Image (cartoon, rainbow, N blue to C red; front, top):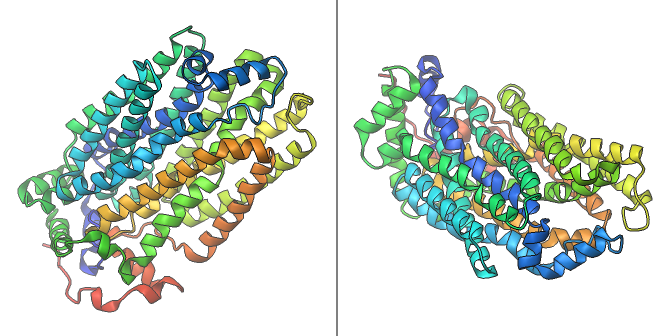
Length: 515
């Protein structure tokens, strides 16, 4: 269950799941670690709300502010309202900084400890919050955003690894998705804060940016309080400490088999001096391909465009100034509740079924939105009727629900449970880097695409949903209830396509017996 060495050791399979308990310390540890998702979610949800506040726009992005005034006076296009290169750079700079930071985070997770990497992420977050909330010019604003991006890079590198290394096989998926659940809670929290802060003039935007200090503080404290993972401790030669932590997490003294397994996986991993080069070896091709494609596909679902566009639809329902609040509460609640569905079902129905069902649901939702907006273009000349707008809002909720129980959490879960120990840190770096690069690209392009393609942007994303669903159907094997140290033997070697990349000579011929 715990290490991910990638080499099947059949004699070890029964010990952990037969003896280990789901202990309170295990749950508390996972919850504390997953608070990193709160910070990431708050950053994602916060930027959209702050960049729509008049005081913020007038101070830092005056051209967008004047365009917004024209729209408020019924003299502008809703599609092109926020089409500004500088504003797009502000939004996407977080992800660009995260891309660079994740490679430094790879070094700290491999050569130092997982826990230290999360502490560093917390301090980056706190520094970014202070600079952003106190910003007097674009320089301070962008610097704060870059510091937040560095925090994202370090947190997204360490947290999924940490959770995978401490989660029992039978609930590994659910505990790992705690990170994504906290992301959705962070987005909801940010939306509610933005709604209240928008009514405070002229410093409401500072309150909104400064409130990110709450999840940043929780992450830092949580990272300082938790023990490092048994695998991380053993990797650094701290055997007795690793053994003690393993006993606490498992709730049993009978952990000799698991400890031997960790030590064997660590011995093999330490023979690899250049993990990024090892990652390119043929036998690592399957997890590497999924680390790349799942992150790209996650962004090509169109989730960012949907979340950006939804407030306009709520305004068209006649909710007026309360549109932002309704948008925040309804969509945010759907996001959180659907992620809870994923936590419950991921280890029961499996990863593949969730992704395939969501693909169909997202495609239907996006196509319906495209069709409706094709006939009722929301611009200064024509608004949606109340009934039509309500139908589109239902379609948006249906879309968000399917994303929240599938591509949202599983895009992170699946790569985190498939890399071997010797390439785990490097593999997670690639996962985070590709995710942030894809998010950066979409963030840079989405506002311009919305302006030029208008409702066609939803048709664009629906096409990609078809592509990713077909990819999952043919190439993604099921990893539900498979111990992560046996993924190579029980998953890749039995798949019709990926088995050709697995070399039998790399699998140890000897097994470790239980103590």
